[in-house]
Length: 426
Image 1 (cartoon, helix red, strand yellow):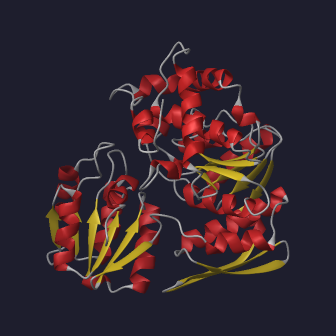
Image 2 (cartoon, one colour; image 1 turned 90 degrees about the vertical axis):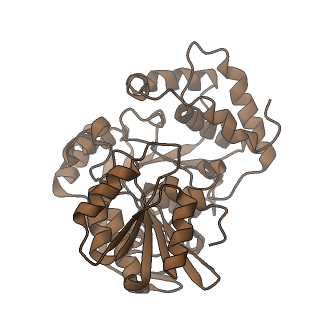
């Protein structure tokens, strides 16, 4: 019996599969999830769901859509991974539920687990728990972000009314495939019969894959390229300005979150709400007012400025560094960087080394595997003569060193790295 919110994280992590077992467990994940959800009396059928997949931006877009929906319909939001607090995965449109609501649903879920013929993984429990929590708290909508891929993802057990597909990049190539086309096929399999598909600005080959899948499922496809026109974006120190036209109407948004790609996420979110019939002025106000942890998150303390961003693909790193360089002097800045194994760390390093002269390689926490020695050796091979590359494996020591040598610090490369600094007075 869980009695305090501090026990919630330990409950989920106690079901973490052994290393090396993920591949085998993934093969029959949907069957296990269906069995688990049946035991819970299928809570995911209690509300309308919107499902998101993609390589980067789905957490931000999910948060924006949920914020807009929640102004008129009680809306649960399921994201992964979290940055600072496990409860970030399961929220009422970005705000925490009451502690007793979290605990009651966790204890209800726990009571069913001994009756199963198998042991669910941590992510399967996260997913089932989100569905149950949203049912128990009376949500009318749930916005659900995939974990890895789409076709075999534990979240692909919902009958969504809408799927939102974000840009596709090479990621998890050992699991999802080694081309954009193969990865797109995996992610396209979240599209459901007679649903609505909202498609971001993807490559032509990826577009055709999603278009074909939508046609097979008799789903209505609305794409960024066809629906959004005259898109523009600019940044200021206190936020950003995003403008575009949709259905003959001009939208001029003053947003708290910065970056060009996030501006496109705003446009895509408004398109999604418009096509669900849930777009209102209150929804737009709610979307533009929010901040999201780890998305160009700025902190200032003692004359030092720190920016934390969970960019973890080459495209998102380019977007981040472009935004950062427009607002700060990169020559006076230092980067603390790490990446999970399996990510395109060389692509990200190349982008960072184009602009920054000081780079500290560190670990990405202990939750998932990272290889700072491998990343450091690659950085040393890629660096220019005037660049300083350091290897400090302890994340907090790396940050302390960065503050000694620079007044402006960027921490990036992984959710799990940024997550180490939730309690820092940066």
